Image 1 (tube, rainbow, N blue to C red):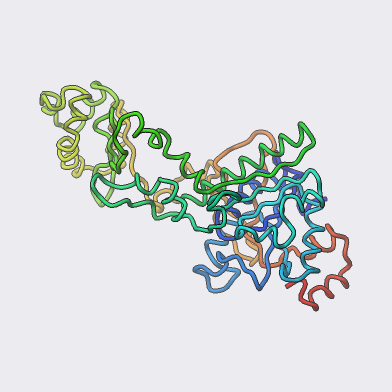
Image 2 (cartoon, rainbow, N blue to C red):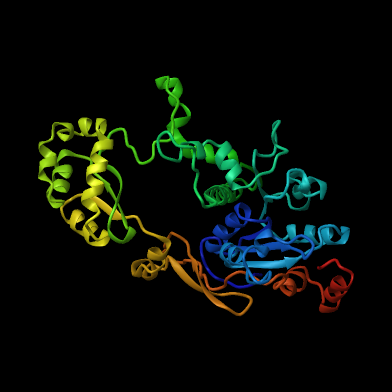
Length: 402
C-alpha cells in the first residue's frame, strides 16, 4: 500500500520523518525524490520552525515549501502516551526512521534504536545530531552555522588576512542531509543483503570536516596552518573571479601557458606574455596579486556572457559567476528539469529545485509540493493503520491528533 505510486528506485520504501528545520527534512526530501514515501510527523504544539519563517501563515512559509517536496504530513501529539502508541504503530509499517531532534528526545519517548528494533527488527534508524549520538559532546545541539564553523569549513572561507566568512546559505544542512540520505540507501542495501536493519549515527560536525580534505592534515605535512586564501590556487594562475560590465563577474582559470597566451590575446593584452612575471605558471602564481589587478581592469570593459563565450571558444575556462536570478531564468536548466512545477497542498502552484540527477528508466515523478499540516491524516490513520473515520475523529477530539 502506498499513498501514490510515483515510481523511482525507492518505490515501496516508506520513511517516517521525525525531523525539523533543514538537515533531517532535506534527507527526507532526497529519499522522496527517489520515489520513497516519506511521512513527516508534526503537531500544532511542535511545529517545524520552517513553517513560521517568512510566510503569511504556516501553510505558505517559503522555506518549508522548498524543503518538503513530495512529503506527506501526519499530526501526532508526541506529548500524549496514546499519540506515541500510534507513532509506534507507524514505525511498524516503515522501513526507515529519520530523526534530527534534540539528543535524548527519541530515547525519552522510548523510540531509541533498541526500542525501534522491538517494534520492527529490521528497521533502519538514521539519527542526525551535531556531534553524533555519543561522546562527551553528544548532548549539544546546533544549527548549520554552528557545525560548519566547528567542523572547520568556515575558517577557510574568505579572503587572505580577512576574518572567516563562511557562506550566507545553510550549506551545512543540505550537505549533512544529503550524507544522511546516502547512508540510508547504503543501509537499505545492507538490509537487502543480510536481512538486518542498521543504526546510522550521523555527525553534522564530522560531515563538514570531510569537506576540507587535506587541510585537516596540512600542518603535519608542511608545518603551516591553512588559512583563508580566497580564490588563490597554489598551481594555477590566473584563477579567480574578475569584474565585468553591469556588476557581472567572470570566473577564469588557466592551467597552461597556452591557455594564458590565449587569454591575453583575446583581451588585447599580448604584452602580458612578454612580462617576465607572467612567463610561466610558477611565476604567475608568485605574482598572482599583480596579475589579478591587471586582468580585473581588462575584463571590466566586457559583457560577462559575451566574454565567457569568446574565451571558451579560444580554449580558456571562463564562465559567468551566475546570480540566483540568472540561474532561475536559465533555459537549459528548465529544459533539463532542474526546476519542476509542483502543486502545493494549499492549492498553489510553484517552481521548486528538483533532483540533480536524471534516471532512465523509472525516474520518480515529482508533482506535489509541501503538504498542509496534517494533510495526510486520513491516509496514515485510516488506510495505513486501519482506523475508522469515527476512531480518527475521536483521536482528534481528545487531542491525540492535533
